[in-house]
Length: 155
Figure (cartoon, one colour):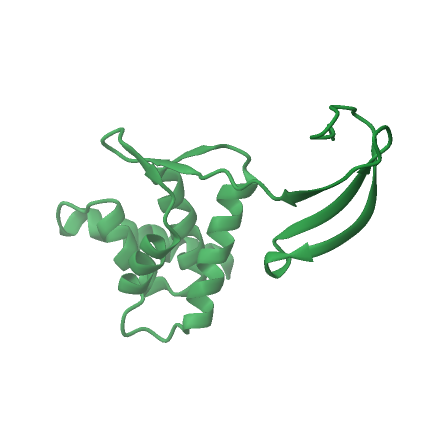
């Protein structure tokens, strides 16, 4: 860390303590050359993830928007709010852990469908009907057949 007074690049940390509810660390430093003290703050850098929509526009990842879409699919289903929060946490973690700064809405939709399939099959079909934009009853039946086939293979 460069001393703000003399520009010397060697210092020692005298005191460190968490601040801002543990989201940052405050450090008191002393310059090895001029012996003046100064304070630095260390924070985790959160880079926003951008979602690339079907129409190629980009918008920041919005956890609440994702949660609301999943909640609509799970409406009147025996799925707890804790399960929904955990599902969104897992998807959000997966998106941030990918280390990519952009993700397609299709990739997010596939993550949601994979997790909903295990959580609640009716919610999965509801979400799939909107996400995959079923045009008619036949496409809806095709998705149900895939689900039934997957279930029979698991048993």
